[in-house]
Structure formats: structure tokens, C-alpha cells
Length: 450
Image (tube, rainbow, N blue to C red; front, side, top):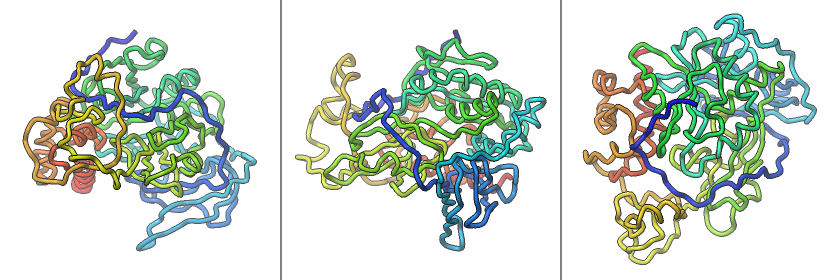
């Protein structure tokens, strides 16, 4: 069993609409696609022409600057569209699925060295699964990462139960760890009481106990092996690691993954097995509660982003959340009305004054309203209460807004990504878009330093 690291700072947000631990029926979709903007830092260049035949593993597009970074088709069929927007920016690639599942020739995984392992994953279209820190962008295979980090649990609101997903594919997960360990040492974060704790080998395993965002890989890196200036580490999500394991074990490309469909707007919250590149509508169609306007979110309610049924599943997320917009909410006396039905961080509602034994059992219905307007940042220390990293979050955000490079470096810009500020953004009384500020800061630093 791994040593337990106790995380004290954070916030568990108890939302209604958790997915039932059962698999709902799902089928492959007729159209599959990828939005290149999901692969942050990749500049797409088409590898095929519209009308070309594709197989499972055929390259659809690659990075114009780093050709080894390839995105491949999860199905066989035909490339039917390369849609473009303003200034001919590529919006998405669309493949018509013929449901035959014909597979392109793929070489077996070669773990002789770090370079051969990278090349094997690149040829299989799996190197784009990794992101690097600093900057939170797709990796460069020319880099030699100090380590690879993966978190095998998720404590975000309504997050999927990763034990429910991963225990059934434990051998593939272990094979993925073995394959990736050829590139760099693998650090795995598990939850204290997880069924995975003590069952994973060939990795440096750390157990964590505490509220969200203890499951964030950035928090785990900060507590286990912080990043210093000039160092590069890679991160990967556990389900993508399972895909690598399938390839390493059997030499086949299987891009299926499990998506948790959650939220009070979901008529049947459950788990769905789909392919990467599936349309969001494959899950949400006829599966949204009736009455009112609802927002579909790719990811969890804190760090996810608005999407639609006509969009493609983001390759890095394992959750879709549906919440009411709340545009027509009619509440007596608004926020000033004392009530038990509202979640409270600061004790503004009666629900925040209840005994912990009762408060922790109640779940609340949330909508997407901000309930306030953006105003000047208040240096109140409220971020610190939910930010469990050895970083001063308020000062870092201020340095990003001012684009003070020296202060950004000194305050830890290289260690963070936008999702690390999700809980801080939730409690922010100034209603600032902290994740957007951090994303803009990382992109600006990358342009300046690279």
C-alpha cells in the first residue's frame, strides 16, 4: 500500500445528478470527427483529401511543426469533410463510419528504448494523448520528460467513479504503465481507499486523501515531485493510458472509452462506452430532461466547457454534464432569502450552518448562473482555502494579469494549468474567470519563452 498524502485544503461540491453505476446501451455513430483545437498547441495539417478511404489507425491530420504528432481515425470508412472557418482555420475533420472496423497495419509496440517507445506511440496516433507541463500543451517527442504523471481518481463535482471504470481493465492499465515507463518514470496517484491501491506495479504510487482538487494531477505533482524551471513532465489521463495498454498488450488500436453522463438535466445519468471522436449527441440525444433550457458541458461543471450535440467528444474528458441554464429562475428575495436548498461556502445560507454530519449528506441542484458580476479582484485569501498547492494563487493571478514574467516564474506559473484554479474560481467573490486568465497566461509565456 502506498503512503497516504493528506490534502486539507479544497472543497467538495455536492451536486445532484450523479451517474448510476450501470452501463446504458450505446452504439457506434454514423459520423465521427475531431476538432483540432481540442489538442492545444497542435497546428493541424490534413493528411488526406475529402473522399479518401480510411481505416482504424489511418492518419487524419498531424502537427505542421511536429509531424510525429498524429491524430488517427477510430473507425473505418471515408473522410467526408474538412470544415473550415474564418481565414481557412480548420474547424473539424468528419469521417463517415462504415461499421466494418477494418484496421490499418500497425507495428507492435517497441519498448527497446525511450525513443522507440515514443515512435511506436506516435505511429499509433497515441502520442497526442500526453500533455506537457509547463504550458499544458501536446508534447514534443524530442523532449526527454523527467517523469510521466497520471491520476486514477476524480473528485470534481459529479465526476465518474474511476474505480468502477478501471478495475475492469486493470491488466490493460498495468500494460499502459509498463509501456510508458520506457519513456520516463511513471508516477501514479490513487485515492486512499481505491481498489487500485496496492495493485499497480512498475510505478511510483502515492495515495491521496482529501477534498477536490486532491485528484488533480497538478496537485499531486506539487506534493510528490514539484516542477522546477527548465524541467518538463508529461501527464496523461487513465483511460488513454488503458488504450496504450491495449495496444502494447495485443498490438491493436481500440479507442473506446467510458463516459459518465451526469447532471440534473440528464434524464438517465449513467455510464456509456463510446469511441473517441463520437458526436456528443450519441449520448445526449433524447437524453436531456424536458422543460427549460439546459447547457451541455464537456467535462465537469467546474473546469468543463460548453458544447453542443453537434460537437465531437473532447478526447481528454470522461464526463458530460447537463445543467439548467437558470435564465428563468424565479426566487423570492433572490440570494438574500435564507434557505436550505442552496450550497454555501461562506455560510451565507442556512445550509452552510448545518452540522457537518448532515451537511455532507445533502446534495444540491445547481444551474449555470454566476449570481453576480465581475469586479475588481479582492485580496481576501479566499483562494488559499481551496488551493492545496505550495503556490500563492492570488499573487500569481495578479502577475498574469500584469504579464510580469519574472513574478509569474517566481510564483509557479510552470506548475499550474487552468483546472487547478477551478475551485478558486468557484469561490471567487469577484467572479473572475481565473481559468481563462491562467490559460491566456500560459499561452503568452509559451510565445515569449519558446
